[in-house]
Length: 135
Image (cartoon, rainbow, N blue to C red; front, side, top):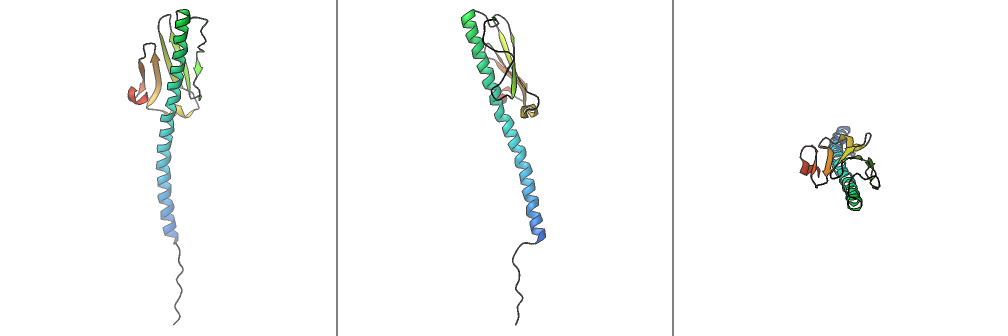
């Protein structure tokens, strides 16, 4: 009564099925992760816009104009993490700051919120799906 011992293990087909499932899950999770990173990096634009707005408000308080030559607000500026370039359109009594993604950075792929804008009145706008989503 010789019984053949059956080897325990996985067949090649079972391994291929598991690898296929893992590949699909990885592809889906990487897409969601990429979207999350791009959305999280929008914070860099918001911080850069508010910091520049604060510098311009300080300039207005000290010199009576947003566009005084003695202002220390460096325009155009790059946001802290370097994902956005911040430009200003200003006059003596108004300004409008715009954050635009820097070429070669992941934010260029942000199709939901391509630019963010902040004015001297605190009005927030941008180009994309919904402004409240971007801000």
